[in-house]
Length: 298
Length: 326
Image (cartoon, rainbow over all chains, first blue to last red; front, side, top):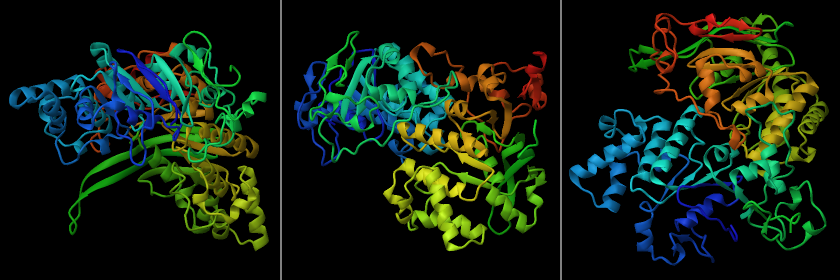
């Protein structure tokens, strides 16, 4: 990813939308400073409550991860440890970050599991992850993520492995928790449906850059970037039968050998004069808090 | 309605749960598919939707003769396929083809694309080399893949291209029905549209039928003519596509549609929250199998299982409450 700018306010949810390999997951791993080797944060700053996370030392970061910023991953089967009971895994974060012990620790674990609506939590907290269904496992992962009342929750494709009705329950749960605690959330997703349902602000990524950023209604009513529009028109709608889906020609580019200039140009239906420039289009403010990077507006 | 291409009557598939190695005892039955009926007319697309474990994939495997049905009949052009002699089974298998979810495991990595597509021809028909090559090239053209691809290996292609190669392999035998089991769920969003459009175009151009298996309600609406909603091994609602989406009658269908993701923030609805989890197909509740999670349960729902009933033109619902509607 390259030169990414965005912000989330308290109690708000940002949707980071893009296809696989566009850099949306790496963006969020950078926020937690856990970018896998050989990746590095080359520059820029990550401000969390006014403090720059890039300048923090590793021990300081450890105090932030899980406590102030936490994450939910796509697959709860691989993010939970199969060898520990669900209760112990929820207790771990609370023990470390809130220094609770003994009875008060377990009371807190129970409270958190009830918060994510695990039925008969007092007996099920001794069960292991394999004894839970996919939706319940993801609720446990959610429980761990919110157990220390973080300021920011990053959810990386949190519901792709869940069934439709289970997904609805999980999303509703996150929304309820957000309402109660004023949590800020970042949703990483390829699905505009999740954005429509959950987010206040949307950033669309393509080939490592944010190419459009706007409030949710603005972007749905008035998508400016040809890629955003194409992506929206290429998915079938639940509410009405579209006669034909829009076909985005070609493949998303590989980030290894990106050509100079606009990365979407080879697939863009409206490439014009300036589009063949070697420069990446600048960020243009088009009103209503709507920013876009496209030569059409530059 | 014209004569059905494929008709499924009272189809059941029970998997035994066994215990012990030497003296195996059957401890119970997983009723994966439990008496379903539907038919697919020539040149139409029928979709089975439902959540994981509802039996939709087992149904497709029964139709593909990859599993043996416990009970019930599958009629293809009026003939019971479970009672065909081996020669006719071969014919059936070339008339019914399949495409699976994962294009990475469905193509043999050690075979060239040309051989992958030619293989069904070699198994099914006696043809000369030149004829085989001609047919392979035709199939590749149909899915808009360059004919030079025939000499290359699967790993040289992206997921979307591989799915099209799998489609070419299915098309090479001129099938009448293709079973599509979650054909696009493993693909990237922008590639899904390409694949769905291609499937759509081919279906119209060749006048073939599809059985689409999917959990994605929006994709099903885009693709299909008729839909069956499955819950725990049964079809609980079956209708023309638009009729079902405009007015779902079964409480499960209603919940499913309300839980699906909207295409615009203004279309966000309150979802109907179903209590509890899907029960195990090995321990079905008495009466209607949806009753433990149903928000409109009445005493009759505990007594016996509702059958599919016609409640308006081409719209069938298996719910006790719905007989009063008309």
